[in-house]
Image (cartoon, rainbow, N blue to C red):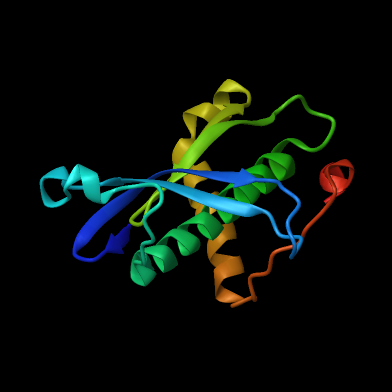
Length: 155
């Protein structure tokens, strides 16, 4: 959520624009829409008009925490299925996307496992939660690492 004067804007999408400019950085464009269009006169939203926007810091922090939690959850789910079946078994997870919100995150995944595992979902949930909690309890620092695409599968 961004604020301009007293109007609220929701971020509809984010786009990375790769361009050569004097500082060598790319542009990250946040496409916004007024939350309540009754508050904003259409002629006040000109592309040439400068605006000072503010990030809702509390919401942004919640999004960052949940995004990290989403990565942690996927790691724990993958770790548990690998431990359960070993590398030689044809079992695991298929990820089909997800979403991150300020109050929750979702992971859309298919668990490829024998029927007995599918029947014991409560155990799976408990084990994944235990793995996540063990990492959280270590209070490890969160860091970002840039990798070239050809090295991603080696992580």
